[in-house]
Length: 259
Ligand code: ADP
Ligand code: MG
Image (cartoon, rainbow, N blue to C red; front, top):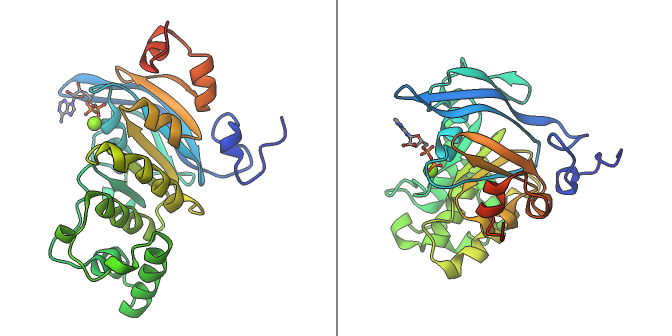
């Protein structure tokens, strides 16, 4: 106890989102129903600045709905969502300061990589030269410099993912929401892509919330790992703890252990 104040407090597994760092994303007792059917039930979770929380769960457990609710794209029936201490439920999606990345990276096909990277900054009123300077610096970090003049169709899947991630973080969002970001990549690329997600997010204050059905991906990327089942968060703890001390049989089975 009392050691939660370092910059990697979340990695030490400090409870409730890394003591000593600001909570960037807080969900309290969140309830979402779609078509009258409950999809998320009483979900409580916080993510500290710079922390990576991965929510793993089988298909249909409510992972995408969770991210959509935070982004303002799914209606919320009960509970509260706060970003950087501020309730955001009344805000439209465009004013929430979140960046969401889907499976299909949604780059603008008619724009070059550099223009794609600059787009969000220009839309917020940044001068072209400043936006390009920022974009080039970020591109350098993720080895995208040789790709800046290309169009998205001239990129590999892994390159597209890196461009989309770089673009998402350039806007300095409060939360970075990643929905199965690696699922469209082939197996060989995935391990490298994991490292690139870590590298892109390192040094960012964004609360990262990544959802996946892939247990090994979850273990590799999480400071803390949550397991979602039928809209309920069954456990939330550092990956090693979840693996060594699963809260129940479902968690144990989902992580592929003999029960
Ligand atoms: P996951 O991303 O974990 O696969 P989803 O969040 O997409 O799960 O879906 C959770 C549940 O909500 C599923 O049962 C799904 O059928 C249902 N659902 C998702 N979107 C809608 C919608 N727009 N209308 C009604 N039900 C939906
Ligand atoms: Mg989904």
